[in-house]
Length: 355
Ligand code: V47
Image (tube, rainbow, N blue to C red; front, side):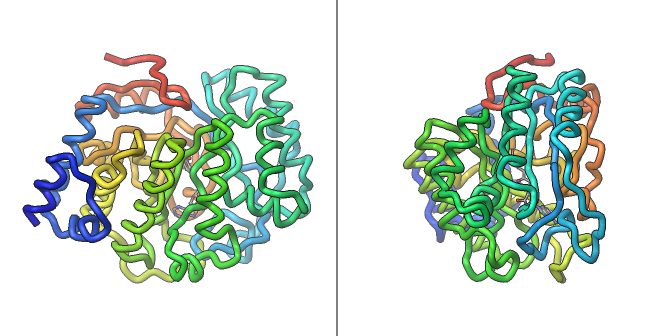
């Protein structure tokens, strides 16, 4: 075990076996290693942005067992917003200081391709300076599959209509066996990676998530991280890695054992250690709780996502995030945890440091 610790501090890359063994390390040793990298990169800064999440429809042709958001027999309230409704939300968000709109929809085969794309153009025309982060690789694959357009054409439509960056959703767990069990039929792992690769080659940035704490094993998490690391070596297009903690309510995935806080922190720390080429590790406060997200900042994480204003996916499965968090609360929570809050834009340029 000492060999792995020495290998890390000597700056050598850790491999799959090393990554799996890291989980056996004492949590504080692991935290020290992750913090070593985090402090070298960012000191005591914790990044966040002022953003608004919008989920314009919950009608979905794909079935993910972990999802409590899509309309189904446990969640019988299907909706699809009109463009005017979406624009009103954006207008409000901008009034409240939002600089990023994060738009993720379910896979609605009746809404039409124009419904998906025209709204981006309308938002950009009305609010040219807002950053639109929209369409996960899962949505892109669904749009291609359902509406008879190639992936390249979907990416072109994104550029043409003003999408600035891609969110990291839909990655779940890349291991094909686990993936088949939890979300058979939607974007495959290789398709997910390939879509991000194409987007990066167009000169655009994206994020990458990993849904953990359900039926996957530790080695699946390491495998997931290493597939991302390999792509990042090639494209350098990922801004942030986001380990999403599985929320258990109102869905169809039967999980017997949930991760402890210690397992969550270890996973965050190992992400920081293994993903030596991805700049930011986001402790998404929605799925980890704000308290644990702040603690994760002692274990390698440096970003919390944003104020969000309204959140529908995690909260549909039990997360306490439906109404986002107020800016002054975000700032004081970060300060009280001993860090320096830094408001960033979507590409991690620093906008304001709250000393
Ligand atoms: O892909 C669904 C996840 C994701 C559950 O790119 C669940 O900056 C936990 O991708 N428990 C969507 N997670 C959210 C997402 C995201 C969030 C914040 C920032 C960014 C970013 C991306 O939500 C889905 C899926 O993996 N999800 N159900 C659940 N029960």
